[in-house]
Image (cartoon, rainbow, N blue to C red):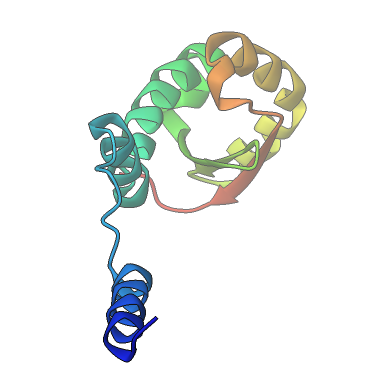
Length: 120
């Protein structure tokens, strides 16, 4: 093999090694699902469904003094107006959790975390 042929061969192998491979485009459904989860839009939709299920599970009286929040690792955060409402929720907590798992099974709620605060 001559020097020119060897140089040509080396150049071609270098070119193949250094060429940039462009990955195929991602499917649109994957891009949209990543965007929704990154921006938190999925949580907004789940919060709306949680709110309706919460009102049905706790009843009119407790719904006036409580607001459901986010679900994190199966724990629903609940904001209550006063400590009396928090105490009352403690008595019916297991019943509410069972009712919520029937109404919104996709949330996989297994517990409640109650906080006292202001409700709009």
